[in-house]
Every structure is written in C-alpha cells, then in structure tokens.
Image (cartoon, helix red, strand yellow):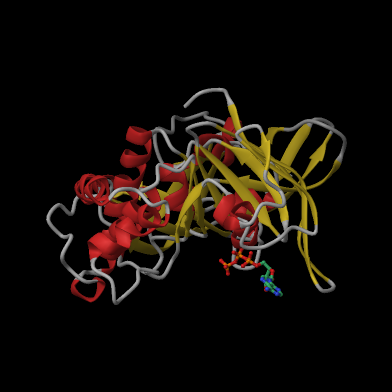
Amino acid sequence: MTQELYLDLRGVRKEFGAFVALQNINLNIRKGEFVCFLGPSGCGKTTLLRIIAGLEVQSRGEIWQGGKDISLLPPARRDYGIVFQSYALFPNLSVADNVAYGLVNRKMPRAEINQRVSELVKLVGLPGSEGKYPSQLSGGQQQRIALARALATRPGLLLLDEPLSALDALERVRLRSEIRALQQKLGVTTIMVTHDQEEALSVADRIVVMNHGVIEQVGTAQEVYREPASPFVADFVGKVNVVPGRVRDGVLEAGTLRLPGDGSDREVRVYLRPEDVLARPIADGDDHVFDSVIDKIEFLGSYCHVHVSTSALAPHKLTVYLSLNYLAEAQLQVGSGLRLRVLPERIKVF
Ligand code: ATP
C-alpha cells in the first residue's frame, strides 16, 4: 500500500425521496488499501458502494478516482470490478465465458482471452475449471469465479458487496483470507461491504464504521476496537460490558470501584471489554478489584465466556473471558466465587 490517494469521496449525500440514506460522507482511500465498510443493516454501506460503482447516483457530492472526477460517469466508463453477495454468474455461460465476459466486451483477441482466463482461474485456486458451469460449482467456488471475473480487466478498484455472507462459516473464513492474500499480491485497491465485524477486523487495512448514513469512525482494526470514537463503535465492534458511573473530582466512580477519571463532573457510561477484566494475576492490596459469583459458563473451545454477578457494580452482570485451563485449574464452576480486577487503562468512558 502507498500513501498515494486513490479514491476521494467529497460530501456525498444520498436521498431516497424524503429518506436520507447517506448524510455527508467524506472519505479518502489510498492506492492498494483494503477498506471495509462495516455497519448494521440499513446504515447505508451498500448504497455508498453502489454510488462508487455508479449503480446509484448521489444526490450531492463528488467522487474522485485516480485524480479524475467520476461523479457523473456511467458504470461502464468507470474502472472497477465488482462481486455481489449472491453469485451473479451467468448460469448459461461456462466458467471460461463468465470470466472472459469483460474481456470480450473490450474486444481482446481470443487467444489472449484464453490465456488470461486460465491465468485467472489459477489465481483464484480453480485451475482447469474453465469448462464447468456455475451449477456444477459450490457457493465458495462460484464466488471465486466471480472474483476472477471482477479482476479480469485488471481494474484499479475492486468492490465487494458482502461477497461471503451466503457461504457457510468455514468457507467464509477460508475465502476471506484468500481474498486478502490475492488483494495483497495484486495490490488492487479494494472496498468490501460487510456487517460482520470479525470479517472486517481480520482483513481490512482500515475499517469505516457506519451508522444511520454517517461515518462514525475510520481506523485500523486495532484503532476501532481499542479506541472506539463513540458508544456505537464500542458496542458494534467486539463485545463490551457497559456500566453506569460518574466522574466526580477527577475520580471515576462505577459502583464500588474508584478509577482514575478526568474531565468535568458528569454522569458517564463505562465500557469494559471482557478481556480487560482479569481473574489473574491478582495480589493482595491490588486496586480496582471486586468479587463476583459465576452465573453461567459458555464453553467456546480454548476459552469460555463466563457470566458473573457482582454487587460491586450496577447493573450487576458482567461477561469475562477465561481460559478453560484456568477454570479447571482453579476448580471454578457455576456458583463459584470469582475475584476480578479491572484494568483501568483499558476502560473507555462516554
Ligand atoms: P444491508 O446490509 O441491509 O444491505 P446497508 O447498510 O447496506 O444494509 P443500504 O442497502 O445501503 O444499507 O440501505 C440504506 C438505507 O437506504 C436503508 O434504510 C434502505 O432501506 C434505504 N434504501 C436503499 N435503497 C433504496 C431505494 N432504492 N429506495 C428507497 N430506499 C432505499
């Protein structure tokens, strides 16, 4: 990835009748960057992708790609390849003809097309599949072919609209890392729309978190997870415990806990990630410690979601993550007492 600006969205707004789907979107994407638009259903992420593709026309604002104003160009005159959620392959065309589609339109000589097609099906891990038809392929294989088709003309921009959401969990994880590897190999600037935060965290250079037609935050996976800019981002990206508290004279009070706080005196909401509430190490005399009782243990393989009750905080429920080894070693089960410690530097206050 370079520092070179490639895609520049300036004040993009979209209205559908009286409904405002996108408010005032300003976003810079660098050449070679992999960006995810992440947000709940209806937040406008697909609409924004479709505006970049020219499949939807913005009500206001400009789109610049590679230093050119493309705001009003029809889709066919823009430089991108796109993959949709449902396999949009032509069912009556072979894999080869599907992949060749854009190349035929560009009147590339047949021999060159054949060579490019075999290169592409190899690139997406399906060499020799040229003669097959979409119905003979699994969902994941169809998406790989759709990806090959999108990349055929060597577009400057790859647009992916929830390309993995129709696949089963295993295939989704496999294909997302293949897409990431391919994207890095080709260096193609890529935007993927997803509502799956784990997907976004795992592949993106930067994540654009959207809600109700506005961008809430743009940042790396670590930034949006560790330093959420708003309660919405903290809630939407990853799991979080929220407890009410207040700041008084530079002290953050949450239940019986006294933590370092700053700013003016006010009521706040304290955001605690489950992994930032520790069961060990805790030594006598440690600060920010409280007692709890285990209500429920959810087994998730190597670690567990442990739900606890405590009179130290209100509301009294928290979720923490503990390893199975630790639970066994400390002989913890439902009903056991559990002393916990909050990492004050990891707390977010809104
Ligand atoms: P999802 O993941 O459910 O697709 P999204 O974040 O991609 O959600 P969009 O599809 O961009 O959301 O839609 C944003 C909002 O705009 C929604 O409230 C949707 O109902 C509305 N919308 C989208 N397209 C149209 C349209 N053609 N006419 C009217 N409203 C629309």
